Image 1 (tube, one colour):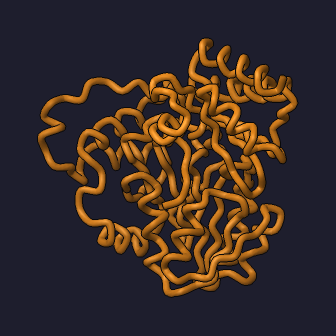
Image 2 (cartoon, rainbow, N blue to C red):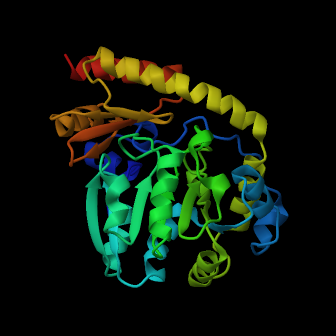
Length: 327
């Protein structure tokens, strides 16, 4: 099992601070997520139904007719490598580590490529995986350059997998609306922008010849009925989505300015996090943790990812902690 953000119970035990007393900035999840209503009792009592409102809501939101609802994009990340014979797979480095882990587990040759070179990786690889915007660096690839890469891969039976877990704040850069295309696989999630990580709802956008075997591999009832109910409502709440796309960039910029004021100038960002590349990342992570503030530590390169505080109380707490650790 790889390390991930959000392990509050582990942090609470290690530092002797109750779970309820932490400020968790480690996940990049929207702290002001979609307001979940009460779920009707009958939804809890029935098995999930594939012909409910979820697929139609997702098709409208992503602008495509071909998609598969999965238990978070993580389910697809773990399963897609099982649908290809051993291949040479190129991934951006650094990026979400589960991608490389999954492809290696199933016998594929994985090559890590810098972001500046990944668009040329299709010349030697059968599969290219790009996280866009990248996690943790925030690097954002343009639609046209990704489609050029896809065309080269598809021409010889290859795949381009684009993980758009953090894309919802900037949908104009998404490849969702051009799906389905041969060899193009787009992964989406409701965990980050919508703040519904606990619901475990994601989508795979691809051609039927990929979606069908993936569905058979994952089996029935991949998503619980209450999660399907909530996700469909969230995907159709255009007013909330519009407001959130206006507020997130402001909060992200505020975080960048706060970090910069304490000599932690970000090296990259998205609407939901700021990434700070610094040699003393491990020390900074430890010092903040002792104050009950959890960040996401990366070893290669040495860096920290800061998510957004939820409210003014949390902003003030982060500011005070930065003053103390930089003193």
